[in-house]
Amino acid sequence: MSYRLGNYLKISVFGQSHSEEIGVIAEGLPKGEKIDLKRLDDFMQRRAPGKNRFSTARREPDKIIFKSGIDGEILNGEPLEAVIKNTDVRSGDYNLDIPRPGHADYTAYVKYGGKNDMHGGGQFSGRLTAPLCIIGGICLQLLEKQGIYVGAHAAEIHGIKDDCFDPVNINGGLFKEIAVKDFPVINDECGRKMQAEIDKARENLDSVGGIIECAVTGLSAGLGGPLFEGLEGELARGLFGIPAVKGVEFGAGFNAARMYGSENNDEFYYDGENVKTYTNNCGGILGGITDGMPLTLRIAVKPTPSVAREQKSVSLLKKENTALNINGRHDPCIVQRAVPVAEAVTAAVIYDILKGGQD
Image (cartoon, rainbow, N blue to C red; front, top):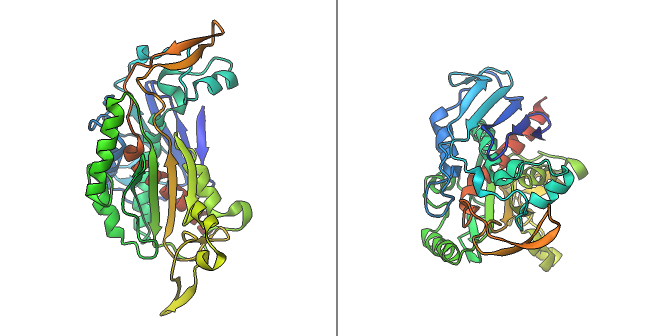
């Protein structure tokens, strides 16, 4: 079974956390475009597990194996298929009778009649974001050739906040600065406090979540559509496909509900021939259509549900209450590893919308 995203760039992700391999098939990539494979690998490594004490001890090289769609570094216009081998699985760590609180183990058991793969979360695992990053990483490069840049950072972890992007004047160079950091924040001092909070959670056999802020610069006005064709809806569909995402907001988001209309409205002005706004509470989108200002959004990421503390659950076979002690290797916080995933999904959706406007 595969899981689809996109209308014109059609992306299908397949595999499970502990299957032999995971992968992606993408239809609609352009013919003749060169892709910097070294840069793509660097992007993949930002998400890869086992890099430091803040991520799972599972070590996967996440090396891309292209099966079709690219000759050397040149896209050939055919459907692109790429896989990643799973090399460090420990399926014995999982109890297949007792669903883990906070995971999809129980709901998947009900939906699929007990035939779902519960090893590492199966197809519900964050492991499936690795092949998604292959296509997202390619889209990032394709968008940059059009002057469009996508970047993100860990805006908050368990209440500790990073500096925010300037919503009306985002320098794409800042995206590159964040991308090469060991911990993806704007303000490194804030990052150190976040890391201390993650350490504290791990020492307490617990986990923490947070918020990722993502932005897109270089978009022209007029991209998207009304109602169900709105850009917010298309982005939200993709972003909610990232495991552990529980909320998506654009611009001022829920804070707009606390403002007067006069405060929330972004007033217009001419900058030469271009119409701009003094503020950007709409996040660069009005009526589902881009207004030419930076697109800004935030996603809420829940704490990693697999924690080492004993939790209450049930035995599905015995139909009785029981206690659960989760073994295995799990992230005390996934926010920092999800930052490039947010970039990948955003880039893929934006590229899909742009391609739809060209066809």
